Image 1 (tube, rainbow, N blue to C red):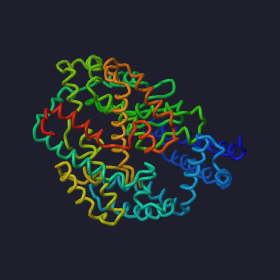
Image 2: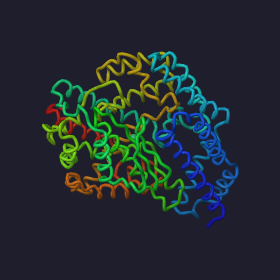
Image 3: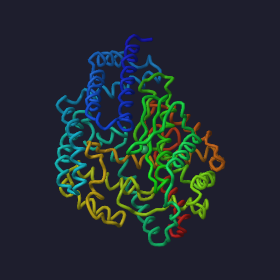
Image 4: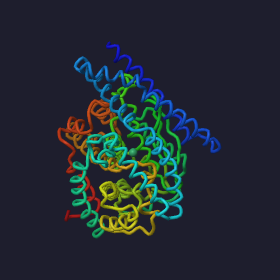
Amino acid sequence: MNRHYQHLVNKLEEITHLNGVMSTIGWDQEVMLPAGAAEARAMQISALAGVIHERMTDPQLGDCLAELTNSGMDAFNEFERCNIREALRSYELETKVPKRLVQELAELGSRGHGVWVAARQDNKFSDFAPVIKRFLDLKQEWAQCVSPELSAYDANIDLFERGTTMATITPIFERLKQELIPLIHAIQAHAVQPDTSFLQGHFARDKQEALARQISRDIGFDFDQGRMDVSVHPFCGGSHPTDVRITTRYKDSNFVESLYAVIHETGHALYEQGRPHALGDLPVSESLTMGIHESQSLFWERMIAQSKPFCQHYFETIRAAFPDNLQHASVDSFYRAINTCKPDFIRVEADEVTYPLHIILRYEIEKGLFDGSMRVDDLPEIWNELMMKYLGIQPPNDALGVLQDSHWSGGAFGYFPSYTLGAMYACQFYNTLLREQPDTEKHISNGHFAPIKQWLNEKIHRQGRLYTPQELVQLVTGEALNPDHFIGHLKHKYSEIYGLTSV
Ligand code: ZN
């Protein structure tokens, strides 16, 4: 093997292993850490972040990459080329930004979080506004350093969903608005809301946990190479495809939330466990982007677990876990109850029809802030106007409006579109699966999930980073991202649930 390439592999594997340690202590912080150890842990994380940054910006790594790219890439196979390309991308992201800017972004990110928590508590946007203003300046400067050829907002989107720009997103989001706003109106106007009373009550935590573990295992989570624990916010972490850790939280009054959080995180976990790590702990074997990751969680949560065949398979199991609550429910009433559509203020609690409008609102605000057509000080009014326009409701205060998300407090601008891109990818992947394996719904109603997981493993998980998201979607589904799949799915499903004839 090429001497420089071997050198690169050694350096990249070391960085991957250090990142694995970082991820483990991050998980530990969310799940296990005694409250008194927070400060010590912050110092440990900061020290390790420094080491990783040093490794990633090591001039020897830069020399090595220069040797490899100058020597012509033809000598390498597609996996090796991917490693070189990915290493170059992250080396440039790390080294093109002056140290002063890196430090100021990190400092503002950690201070911003505290400012946001307090502002939300006091319901006072003006306390948080200066953080957003400073971030916008820093993020414009950052974009100029890393991707001077892109507009500042596009450069920020590219960090989470590479290759995707406003030119792609805007027309797709316009279509979604055109189709979903009338659908939501029709649902609101026509229908009696499904009965959800049997989803309220008391649900023993041990029963909730046993059910969640069973379903997670059934759909393919490998507990020999993973764990499930409890944290304040559900997430999927871990250090390696052989060590994938999901979390959830339990509410005594609501088992659906916890169960579906587990299914969502299991979707992320199956992607992680399915990564091609036999190729080495290298960039080529990593997951692709935020949007593709979210497509995998939403595939299981929305396309599979909120479907009728899934309810048919699990309803009796669920009723057996909570016999008092669900004694008068049926497969059909359960299916309807977990698929209610109702505009509400909070994004993370939104159903699959209204969710995209929460995202579009944030996207339009971020776009307006970056191109200067919106002012930070006006955000509470802009937010409320858009909520009224898109969902027909007015948040009673900013805590339930513009202050609800943590993303901007850490400088994550350009992240929100990934959620809805993920939902659209998930639906397009699912339609392709139905075309290629017409028995899929029958399999789901029999609890036979292995063929579905195998299909995702083969088509998506094992591709690692060989392709861009756009190439992957084209390769798997035979077409570019096409919102018709998602729109068609929502219209069909919710027309049936709500008995609509006009949409
Ligand atoms: Zn997710």
